[in-house]
Length: 153
Image 1 (cartoon, helix red, strand yellow):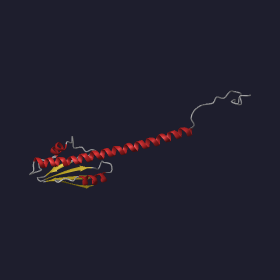
Image 2 (cartoon, one colour):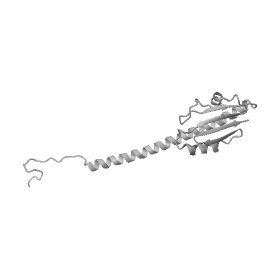
Image 3 (cartoon, rainbow, N blue to C red):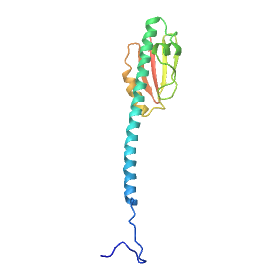
Image 4 (cartoon, rainbow, N blue to C red):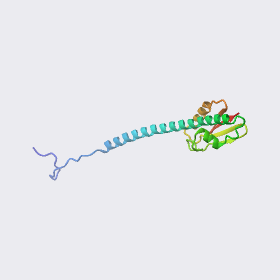
């Protein structure tokens, strides 16, 4: 029997191993799909964690306002940014989303402005936080992109 792996010149042909372009393309497509799914899951998880941190910070403002009221029940003028930061346990005035919150005091009230413009889906987050701030000496309202918390005596 003659060897069928010879070309016209009589040289033996070697079978070359490897992958076809179609096989490589399919593997690449599968890797890209898996990577896209993992990336979108990670992004959603990251945004959820950031929203939770924002909620915790905002609720700490309520704690700070309650402490200000209990320390001086005649005036909230002493409850400036430094006192709010101290009483709330926050380490800086930078929010979880990267903005900077601020506080303005008057004799009978304190107004805390917490910007949400750098947060993902900030409108629904702001509306949700305004509802959750249900304290006897504080009220919250959201007008895009700022959450405003007002503590009063």
